[in-house]
Length: 451
Picture (cartoon, helix red, strand yellow):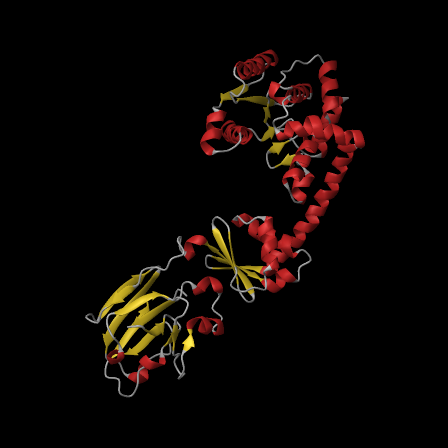
């Protein structure tokens, strides 16, 4: 009966095709030993892989010997590997469970690629599923964390998700199977064991049908997740565009969405932002100038959009780059400043042939005090914009020009003494423009426009 249910579940979920060669993760515990027995009785071609994490001394070695002996008895190929799990955990400051998981799946992946296996079978069952969902709920999770594992996840299959622990134990006893008991499974110092031995039995006492009902709840949540995913993909299509290295997110598309905070999270989570940050972000979405940072990216709130940029584009220290000083003793020179390059030259040019190009500044040479200084703008800077008679704060000028928040830091200014003569690539100061009395023109230009 169990073999029939096993094959039916595999067929319904299309877990294994006729030509697939399957690798079974076999610890020696009751779950994986039952899985191996079912594969054998179902006449499905398989090999086994056993990880020795060296966490329980002689007990770990005995588990390996047990599985190796079993493989000889049933004449099935087996792969084994020993790992220094504790040292890896200590070195990388992670839990031994996380270290073991990293080792396990990395090695399994290597075996799949090197040996030509199409699927990796894991002996998770309904009780494991329930424990994982409760664990995720305790940590905090979204819908995906409450749906549990899929029977088929890329090349990983879980062919025992149709059954529960009691049924597995009954099958093992009925078929006189042997298995190894992991002594660490009894200890409640691990969260999962505490859930298994303390929390889950209490829930089942309240609702004896909890394990079964959780399976149906998972199916409903998976369908809910599919509906939500469709909505998220539509939101991303209309709200998100790329501009160079930056990601532009339109605020009106977010605020009019049915799930604005969740939408922000789905967009920003791949860039290292957590859900709490997205809650804070939505609460401040109408506050231009506010910045939220992950470990690799910075997100700026602009007037009509959110701008996500790699941190390296903003500098690592938050300090301005040192200024570059420009002399008057050369006709043509290229000067590098940060990621910008400028071409400076002094030459005679017919005034009527001067192009209206903001990337090139044509200045009255005799009004300049050398050396000129090129630096990043800073709060308090002001100048007299071309065509105006009064001074204007540079910060106000950039607002009027609708310079996005993420690009403001990239703005450079050219100074003569303490006076700004050019907002690089945008506007010269009216006091240094070419006039009818200009005799010599000083030209400063971007080699390429990068603002």
